[in-house]
Image (cartoon, rainbow, N blue to C red):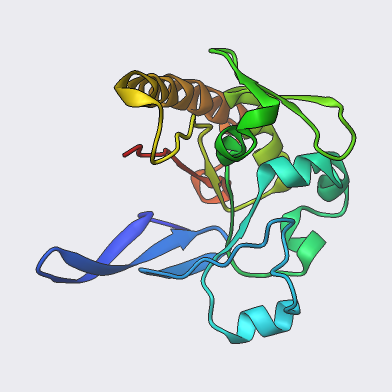
Length: 198
C-alpha cells in the first residue's frame, strides 16, 4: 500500500531524482516516457518495451476514444490488458488535440468540439468526459483537461485565456475525478496530474 506518491532520493543544485509510486509499480524519475498513441509503442513488442527499462508508457485519450473506444478497452480488462503491459501507464487528457487539431475544432468554456478526421463525426470533449474516458481506460496516471496554446500563440490575450481556462478545467477535472473515485481506496486510484502552462 502506498504511503506517499513521490519520494525524493537525491538532490543536487536544483536537480532531483526520486521515485513516483503508482498502483502498477514504481517509476524512477526523471524518466523517459515513450509515446504509445494507441497504447502500444510502435514497432516494439510489449516484451521489447519492458526490456528497455522504460518506466511509463504514454497513451492518447483522444485517439483511443475514437478507436477502438474506451468501452471496448474496458471490456478487454483495461489499457494494461489491451496492450499487454504490466508497468505504469499514463493517459493524456486529449487537450493536446485542442492545439494540434485547431483547424477542425471549436473551443468553448464547456469543452472542445472536434471533427473526427477519419469519419467527419462530431466529437465533444469536456473536462468531465476526458476524466470519465481516462478512468474507463484504466491508466495509472491521468491528466486534467487543458487548453494548449502554440509557442507563437496570437498574443498575450490568447495565452492568458488558455491559462485561465486550463485552471478552471482543472477544477472541473478534479471534481469529476473525486466523484468517480470516492468509493475507491487511495492505493486503487490513479494519480491525477494538473497541467502547468508556460
